[in-house]
Image 1: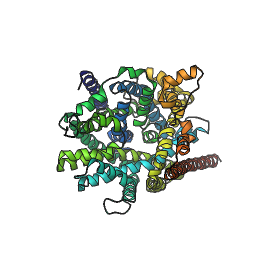
Image 2: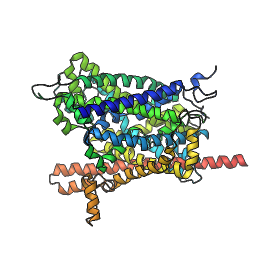
Image 3: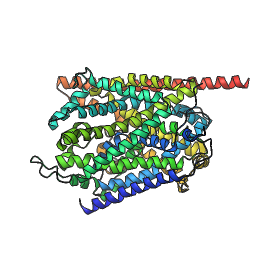
Image 4: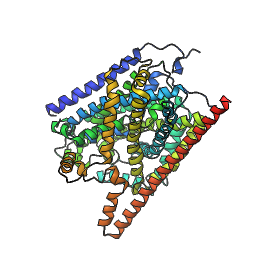
Length: 45
Length: 556
């Protein structure tokens, strides 16, 4: 590959992977809202 | 009254939303758009459009959906109705059901091809076939009279099977949709990563005596080398905006429907960008590393330049996988068509939910009744696309329901959200319960930039100049030479100008008959779509009457 194509590909793909990972990390680490919330699997029995 | 549904987990909702967005276009449309519009430079307008149009539209649709859901509305006609006092907006909302039914009708047909190709990859149908034989296999498959399995009308059988599977999952409600996304999305990514690694490491190992210069690096160079001069071409920006628009599944009404089940104290801003970026990961990272490099690695860059298009997925990839040996070729076929299947089904399931939500909210239908009626309507609308595929019915559905209707609805909903509902109220809705501090510059972007970009996309499609030559058309207009329209513009497509020109030029009797048939089936497809829209609008009218009657009864 030529260097400009390689640079653009690596920069773009790493940025997209990093941002996607960052947002998913935020979702996983966000404190849960008090019940009743929108999600049934964490409802108290 | 039918029971209220809910999402099981937050991750399940995000995966379902991402699955709704990730479709066949991520793997087949994006790389082709990139190579046709400046290679690596395409990514610049593409990402700009993602930030200025894609993400704002996601936020608008999530906010509208959750706002409408608060009043127990789970489809766009009455979601839009809750946002304004003007009654006509709910008829704009008909697009949010119509588009899904019409797109599902032909989309499930493509989805059924992927099911069928998984089967044929496993049983080794493509073993030893030449490239032209693999291409011919596809042509015979869509000409439904042929059968490769011994099952008569194989294409129809797979289509019905695919619809039955969709209907069965939908009849399980949101839990079924969520489970499908939780299984389908990880598998899609797993299969995609394997094939992308293959595309990335193929190098020159696929060169043969027939194509001694074939190299996957050439494909990647072609895809990623920036041609910065293309950034000044309006055609490239319109293509980038169009790609962002279609890849995110905005303007369909499915996002509203999914978000309508989220409570106002729960986050939507972070959920929306998480699902949006997951779609970008699949498209930009995986989508760019499979079809183009693998095809260039075996067939050479010149072949890719001449043949880059949707058909490569079915007409070329099975032949290329055959070069990986008997076991790996079957595995690669299962992975490739499997990932396309998961991309397809997570989208087609989303298309069923607005109809089910509408019928439950307005007429008290349960999810089983809603799902099976959806399946039946899609079957009736879809059979013409299967049986008359060669006559262009499929293309008409794709153009009007899968392209034009999306842009019209997205433009209308953006105006409603930012200008009628009001940006301040809209912002408050977006930020309610938010786990993400959205930069306030997006208030300005949503109010001015996003609608302006959508208007440009719509006008660009309405009056596309001849040859898509925007600078030439502008200078012709300014010098008094007029604006010559391209046959692909909406204006000329409505008038069937291209077909009439071909008919006028045709001299061969068989060709004239073929073109006359095409014209007939084109108009037939449009009539079916118009009747469907009118029928849905009538249902919305009936629902509005019922609501008025119920309100006056309660008041009395």
